[in-house]
Length: 216
Image (cartoon, rainbow, N blue to C red; front, side, top):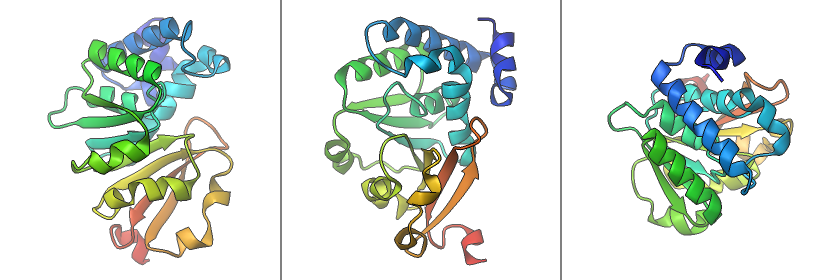
C-alpha cells in the first residue's frame, strides 16, 4: 500500500510525517505476517486496519498532546501503546511502557519496536506483577478494551495521584461505566467522542484540581 493511500484512509493519518508512516507500514506488514500464526487482532478488522487500529490509536496520544512518558496496559498487538511510541520515535525523552501477559504477543511487540526504532519498553507479565516495580514518572496511561473503568483506575491510581492522565478507549458502554462513585469522587472524568467510531469514546481521568475546568 502506498503512503498516499494510507494518508487518504483517515484525516488522522493525512498529515503525519513520511518517516512515521514508513514505520507504521513496517508495523502493518509485520502484523499481517504474524497474524497467520498468532491471533493478534480480530480477523474482521484486518481489511480496515488503518482506521480501526492505527487512526483509532493515534487519537489517544492526541488527547494529551504534551505527554511523552506513557504507560499502556494490556497492550496486545500494540494498539494504542506501540502506535504512541512510534509517533514519538524521534523525540528525545519519549518513552512508552507496554505491559502484556501473552509471551507470543510480547515477542511481536519486541519485534515491531526493534524494526521501527520505537522508544518502547515491553514488560511481559501480569499488570499486578509489573506495576509495583514500575517507579518511573508517567505522564499518561492508555488502555483499550481491557477492563471496566473502575478497575483501570485502581490499577494506575498511584500515577494519576502524581499528575498523570488516564486515556481509556471505550465502546458504547462508556457512559454506563461512569458511576456516581467515580464522578463524585476524587477524580475529574470527561469523555471525548471518538474520531473513528460514532459509538466509541475516549474517557479521560485526572486527579481533581489538576485541570482548571473541573472547578467550573
